[in-house]
Structures are given as structure tokens and as C-alpha cells.
Amino acid sequence: MALSGFEGFEKRLELHFFGDDPANLKLGLRKLNFECIQQTLEAVQCTVVSAVGNSYFDAYVLSESSLFVYPTKIIIKTCGTTQLLKSIVPLMFYAHTLLGLTLSSCRYTRGTFIFPNSQPFPHTSFQDEVTYLETTLPQNLSFRKASIMPSKSSSHSWHVFTASHHSLSPYLNNHNYTIEICMTQLDPILAANFFRPPGDGKSGHSAGKEMTELTGIYEINEDALICDFAFEPCGYSMNGMDGDWYSTIHVTPENGYSYASFECVGSTSVDVVHVLRKVVQIFRPGTMTVSTTSFGNEVWRKVGGAVEPLGLKCRSCAMDQFPAAGTVVFQTFTPLRRKTAH
Image (cartoon, rainbow, N blue to C red; front, top):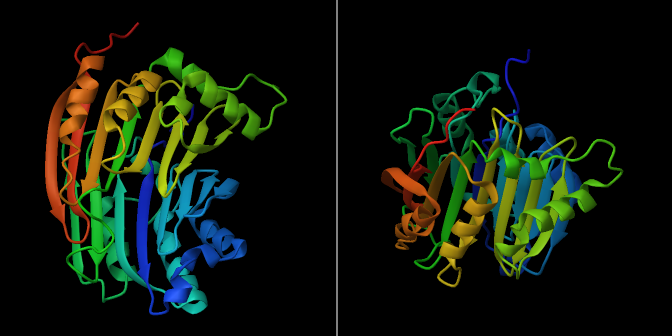
């Protein structure tokens, strides 16, 4: 019997850069050639399976989650046993030597791993991750903070590390926020939608598109351009693009360690109540955690009101402040009536 299943919980890294040449900033990091991206992902131990771009950013579906490249910002989100933090050194090198860009801030977040003993260094513990970040990041990122935000359940906590060259961020404003949703114990009937029939003869792209339609994922934001992919024998990833806003979903549907995540950057124009309700209806999780990061935007207050009519109750709420990242609010939800074992 296998010691563990596939680790669904992602590690998420957000890096911001700055430069002196305005002309160079127009495309910025998007000018990195595909070979540089491949070499960076090789250090992480994942690959690109699909890509799409618009006039604002490029979005890559990876063999383990997603990558988003903006002119001065990169977001990498990887699951499984990837070594995400090993992307920092090559990205800093390519950005500086090829584009004249310098790292100005870093934010790293993750939930609690389902299979922590399967993680390779530097992800063997949050302490190891923080030590690696502290020694890898340049000294000018002097405003630093690491915190484990708790919940009432020891199996669900939110790990946050931020570092910046300034205590306030020029990249966020009061209207924008990042929302990260992690869901476990998915409804088995709904999770079955993310399995492929053996020998279906379809490509990952066409099978992914069918899953997007079948599950109603396309209804979360009908204005988004969706790049989707279905893995064999099961699993699903999607990136959505709507102007300069991204959204992303990743699903590990195996019974016993089922997991799904939804993430997006939102603003006051995003109907977060609609988004949250659609996500809950698509997966019906046994446990859901919601983390929001923002400056001044209290979108977290809408979360409970959105999902409680669907039978989920807020069990804990933790809040903390991070230099240049703003306020992080971490909430956990479980059904009003816990599922009984059959």
C-alpha cells in the first residue's frame, strides 16, 4: 500500500520586480523566453502543459498547477512534491541579467500539507521554508515577517511569509484583493466529474474543456477566457483570464485525499458572493478554508454571508498584518451537519 497519495495543497509564490527603464517595463518579465521559463520550472520539477496570453499577462497551466507572468509580477503555484522556492534564484538571475529588473517583494503562502512527510527540502517544514527564504532573498528586502495563522483544527492552518524593500506596497490598492480557497473532502459524486474514462482517446485539452462545461466551472466568470486541461486518469487544472484579472482552479479528486483550490485576484467590480457560491456548489467540500489578502478591502466580511446559506458555517477566523502585503484574513468552514461515514 502506498504511504501517501498525491499532495493537492499548493505552495504559492508571488514575486514583484522593479526597474529604471520605463520602456523595458512595458513587457518586462513577459520578454523572458520560453527556455528561461522551462529552466526555472525544471528547478521546481514541473513542466508547462498549456499556455495562453492576452494584452496584460501570460498564463501557463503546469503539470503541477499554474504560472502567471505580468510585466513586473510573477505568481507560481505548484502542488505535489515540487520544490517551488527553488524558482527564486533563477527568476532573480534572469530578471536582472536579461531585463535589468530587481526583486522588490516576495510573498509565500500555503495551507497545511496532507502528506507533510513526503515533501522534499526546503518544504520539509515551515521553519525550513522560512530559513531558505531568509538566506535566499537579497538583503534589501529588509521588511520581513513569517506567521502560521491557526484555526480550531490542527490540520488546517495558513502559512505566510512576506519580504519587501518597503513597508508599504505600491502594487496593491484599497480596491484589489487576492482570495485563495482550499477545499478538502469533496463530495464524491461531484469529484467523480474530474475522472477520465479509461482510453477515452481525448487530448488533455478537449477532456478539460468537457469538464469545464459539465461541472459549471465556466459559470464562475462567463467573461473569462479559459485555458483548461484534464490529466490522466484524473485531475483538472484551469486558468481564467479576464482583462488583467486571473483565476485558477486545481482538482485532485481521489477518494481519501480529495482536494480542490480556487484562487483569483478580485476588485470591487467582482461579484465575490456569486464566485464563492459557484465554487461551493461545484465541489461541496467537507472543509473549506478561505484566505484573503488586501489593503483596506474588507471583502473577507462577505465570505460567511455568501456560503452560510449553502450549509457551511464559519468555525474560526484569524487576522494578521504583513509589511507590503496588507491584511491577511484566514477563515475555516465546515458543513452545519458533518458528513457521516457510510
